Amino acid sequence: MLHVFPKLFQYGTFFIPTYGVLVACAFLAGLWVTLKLARRTGVNTELVTNLVVYSALSGMLGAKLLMIAFDWDHFSAQPGDIFSFSTLQAAGVYQGGLILAIVTAFFYLHRQKMAWLPTFDMFAPGVALGHAIGRLGCFAAGCCWGKECDLPWAVTFRNPQANELTGVPLRVALHPAQLYEFSSEAILFGLLWWRFGKEHKPGTIIGLYLVVSSIMRFAIEFTRFHEQSLPFGLPLSITQWIALGLAAGGAWLLFAPNSRNSNVIPSPAH
Image (tube, one colour):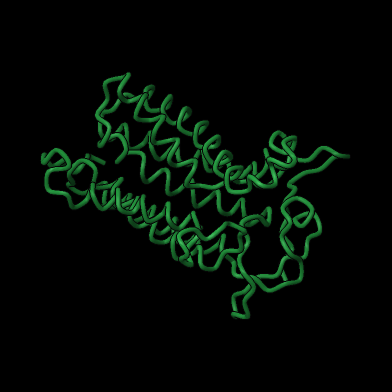
């Protein structure tokens, strides 16, 4: 049995959600990592900080927009729920946030005349770390829960507040899908941090992030409960199709011989 605490603090009807606090921690941790790498490579930290903020805001918007698109039958019937507090608190769909954040970054980098592949490489480890911490927030809230299972490591939620806020079923053994993703992204962060410190071609780190993160998300989706439709007559969710597309983009960055500058970036000084 598992008693999570979706509300970190409550006074009357006001409460501070644990998910929100952990998302804030995720943002700060990702920013710290990115600024550390920016200093190591001699990049303007003010420009990087601005890009982090713009990307984070657009990422939250993109995650919410894709969540609304996936559940359009509900939101079209009850449009007021789009602006409800529960929608504001919801994690959204991560890939929607990632895609809109990348688009925002492209425009910002073009405007500031910054090299986009080295900059994305610098961001990738922080994104992985922030994603990992954010999944702990999902776990604390009870959202993004897994399918029923009888495995020894199954988790059983029993806090009524988690059910009220997210709809997670209580007293049912479930895959800890949130912890699967937390673990995989935390390991990926370590891999990317190590690889960034080695000589690499521009696009290597972001390409590695897109390939590994998307493959892991594709696999974890088989353990998650969701009500997405399964398009094309195949047993894959829309999220999995997006993961395949992102993985293909990352593979292109890694392996296409003429896709990027062949200059090798030396190992930065620690």
